[in-house]
Amino acid sequence: MAPAAAGSELRLSVPRAEQLSHWDALAGLRQAGSLCDVALRGSDGEVLAAHAVVLGAVSKRLRRQLEAAAEGPARPLEVTVEAPGDAVRAVLHYVYEGSARVGPRAAPHVLRVAQRWELTSLQDALVSSLLESLSPEIATGLFALGEPFGERLGAAARAYILSNFVECAKSEPYGRWPAAVLDHILRSDDLVIECEEEVLACLAHWRQAGEGRDKASMAALSAVRWPLLSLPALDALAKDGGGAGAFCKAVAEQSLEARAAHLGPSSDSAIPALRPRRSYTGWWAGIGCAARGGTVLAGRGAAGKAGQAALRPRVIRPHEGTLLFLDATEEPGCVLQWFLRAHCGRSIAGKGSHLMGAGAEFEDIADVWSGPDDFLYILDRDAERVVQILRGESEVVGKGSFRLQRPCALAVDADHAVYVLEAGGSRVLRYMDGRATIAAGHTDPGTSPGELNAGPTGRIFVSGKGRLYVSDTENHRVQRWDPGATEGVTVAGGHGCGAGLHQLNHPGGIWALDDGTLFIADTGNHRIMKWKDGAEAGITAAGGCGPGDGLHQLREPLDVAVEAPAGSLLVADLGNARVVRWVVPAVPAELMDALGCQAKT
Image (tube, rainbow, N blue to C red; front, side):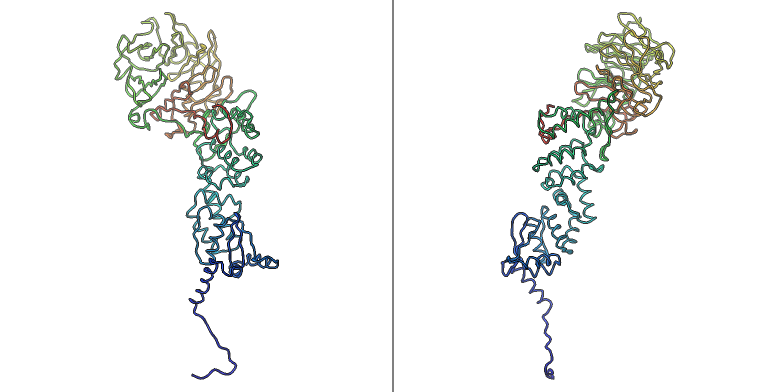
């Protein structure tokens, strides 16, 4: 080999693998704390050592920060990092060794450091991993930092929180959310929750998680959609909590105002606007959005043996702790006594019964009434008679002296006076002590205040005050006849056939409370309406979500009854071949605990 020319340069090179091994050695130096000239101080006070040359090589932004710090006399150079020590440690491990293990709690902080130090490869790797493994702690941790983390991750974290809000609110980072972040989430229509009570409870938990949050919490109360809470919850919250502070008093004021949505309109107050979130199936008076609908007690969709019963329920009545259904599946129909705890029933009149006595055979059962003193009354339409039953023995009311023409419906008052809607639904007869008198209407149908046109599907109800209510089906209204009155008063509907809250569409069964509040089976609108005494319009108490077989829906409901003392609604859902109960939920104990209020429930 020829010698190199005098003065020429010698070219030396180290194999790439050996060069990388020198870099790998830096990790050992850092772990040993050898030659480290930078101290990184985490937000929790933990200090970690590193090499300025390494940090400056991987991050231009950090290099500028280190160069500025080097102008001062302090050695080693100290850099404050807005992240806890475990997150800083993970970043250093990635910088020195090219890999890192990141826990859920540290992940948002690692991403924040990667963004601020412009560690693009770490940021991209972490975003890809987080998109596939979001959890309540990770998603809420990202939002707790109050910073954007890119469009993809930000949108994914927001969607995750909206879909899993209650679980997210139980995580530790939720308590560190900025007030603006919480307000943004609570106002979303896309928030997926079981009920609005959960929104208020989560807000109260956030308030308790930090000091000095009363002002921000009170501002966030406007994000709660108060009319969507149940009436029992609003009643409990409206009692203030006995001087529990400004926050509880603000809760009480909002609750008191929102109760009007459940009670119905009055002359001096309007109903607050309802804005249900997309996750709710419906809103109903008393229930609000605190339930997904009704529970099937019997018939299609019921659990166990109760679901095997083939029903065509036309009438429903509470009776001595049980329920009475008029089932029209087979002629002449039968009256089923349903035992709620046993989830089964038996025929006590009509098809399949063992009824005894003079009135035991029926031609066409049209109505049933649970009278006082354990008496039952059954209207046998084709036989044009009323049968009275006590302890399995039957007899005909009036024994032939009470003559009816085309009877349709039946009611009995506390004095055993029997009322029958007859003449094809154009008048009501009252029978007592062997004497029949006209209580409402005339022989011919009509539309005037003194006339009725209830038709064969009309229903009647007599209140404890002796007021007679008639479901005037073909006139799409409910009429009230006070004792001795010669004309009726329209107390619901009367504005033509329609689906507005001020209208009815072929109303069926009715139930009146002592204060005059009515519940009406608005058959043609597939809903149950609650109508306050003297109100111009009603509010939906069940159904009203279009015809269907969902638990939030009804299909041609024929009758409704109120179950005492809870106030649950019982519905003969004819079109769905089932009997449904709509229950007003109890006040969640966790809500009151979270608020720190002492209201009695």
